[in-house]
Image (cartoon, rainbow, N blue to C red; front, side):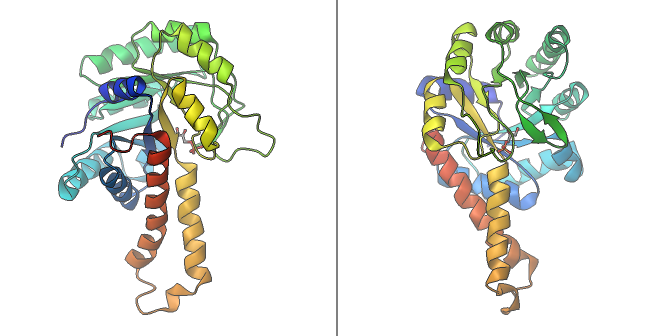
Length: 288
Ligand code: 13P
């Protein structure tokens, strides 16, 4: 099945009161196990890459070719979108040219007027090719790819102005943070989430920093209009913990225990279980 955009996928999720998981790719194995998990759970899925992840995996075309060839090889039939995560202005234009089916333009660090102007240009370019666009208002807290933001609550009026540009989904700060949540984290701000949903005329909302948010808060956020949830950190932790266990049990000393494929599979099985668990929690199981 060919890659599709996020547009229809997220509209359907919004109407059906569930969210589609967007999982970041780090390498070939990550791609394979996320696709397999989505297929086994009969769920739509978004595979996403930041510019730093694209660079790590040798460029836009390498990533796109890998995802497409793998979908073909594995016989993936569930809907899949290839999405640029936190794209810069130039990065988003590049992803549009390179055939990504969805892009995020993150202009949250610009002054608002500039964010609006740049978002508008990306939306025009992308929509002319049937590619969906996600924009961001209000920084998401934490550090990602070396960029740190303190995190802020998005202004519902600013969200309304971006939504009016015709963007397909909106990432808005509601107290969410990339990476691990600190022990004194106050939780998601549902009041602000509801205000944003109402000011934007019910645009599908994107929850970044989806790792480590308690299940009840995830479910409530989805019931209030969150339709896409980004998860990266928890997959990395699952992988790393599994490898700690592998070496803790001295499995590398077993016959073929040193084989990179055996070691990787041990870690990737944990990532597969994590992705399946998130799909179940987000409610997108059997929605393909
Ligand atoms: P986490 O790494 O906190 O799961 O966040 C992922 C994300 O939001 C990617 O944009």
